[in-house]
Image 1 (cartoon, rainbow, N blue to C red):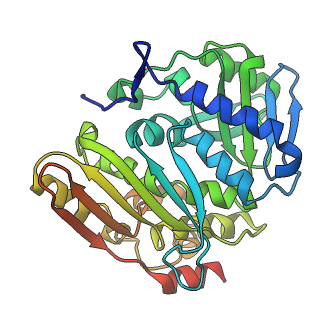
Image 2: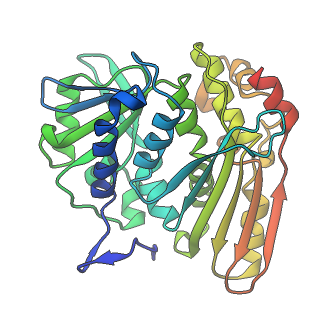
Length: 328
């Protein structure tokens, strides 16, 4: 598969792990100001709490989201999310959206340990070092850095034994692994999840078998959900921010019929589950996440612009009334 790769430097493709590592170093340097807490685990791994046992904040979440994207995406806070009653939002952009979103940001690495009972989905550039997911055979992107970062959406870092296994899978020393974490309902957590508005579009485009090599650039906006301690409600709000309040624009190459078909199939409204706050949808399937139509997990409003012809195609629409019902 012909995937557009990041620009080369000295004959080598750009490393998402190295780029993210520099961002992580800056978070550590600014930890006190960001209200993050940095500790070292028993295996030597660096743990960075962005919102579990510490308040964290919106800025911690913004930086966390850029780490998730492997330093190949920018995330900024905007006062114009597109949802009038909830104007605070994020703007996400990447010139290398396939690598930034699918090779790094996507939470595709299942990390579990029977001895400790730990379970989490890992995201961030460590995925591109471990390459344990089948997805990497298609992406044809290889990272060879000597240090990396893993991001966990949760209230604790993995036990040190698990961190050591993660480092081993990445072929690095545990001391060269940074693990950043924040709960779904924290300030940082709500920001980093909203910043996945572009990522879910890329993931769905992949599921629709659109040629990933034809996706050149990408942009997205989503409102930031108000934090809430209840995990189910927090999960509902953060999903609703994208499903009913997210909008993206992809810049592609190829035929207009392919670009138009992508625009028409991408929006969340194409799902049979569309139309209710996510918490209600989740309750209707008795909390079985895998019973929810996966096509629901996509932005509300989509624009696909074809660089070869100059034509753009739009589909979907924002649903501010559902966002409002969810966020209240």
